[in-house]
Image 1 (cartoon, helix red, strand yellow):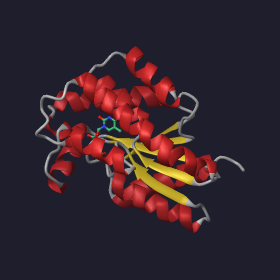
Image 2 (spheres, protein in one colour):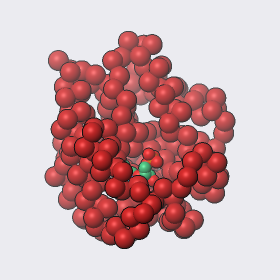
Image 3 (cartoon, protein in one colour):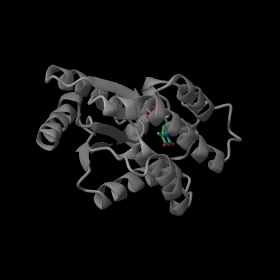
Length: 207
Ligand code: TMP
């Protein structure tokens, strides 16, 4: 059986990923795809427990290396339990964030060495990458303003503006370096404007 499609959605805080994940799931299902919608960090019972450790804003002392390793620990569990089996069954996996988020947040934001991230990526899923990555890009201040209206700030959202500027730049650099896999979506507009771009890209790239 053909391996299923693997689509990831990325972006900074307040980019509107959740809304677009919901829309895209419905759209893919209406076209006959069997879709598994999931997220990182998380997606399985154990990986969601790791997520809770990572996002809890009481954990200010969590060091960058532990943060990086926990991201990949959650990912290893997620791949083993959910992503690889679903792709093996020919299902479409739609994942809210994947390893590009580690390159952006731990690489760009925390300025962890690229060699370290590359080594862990190779160990955890060297042979498997998304077929398509939608990067929802928007100015940092606009995103943070939207995110602050939505919910309480988690541990990452406590970071200063310059952290999120580095995250955005790291995402854009990665999209430029891997242009065949990435599609950069202008997420500064309203829901319909953002969705129209996503629909066009997915139609074109995945047929
Ligand atoms: P979310 O708010 O989009 O659910 O993502 C949770 C937070 O985790 C978000 O601030 C980004 C962060 N994150 C990383 O720092 N590295 C990663 O590899 C992933 C997947 C998420």
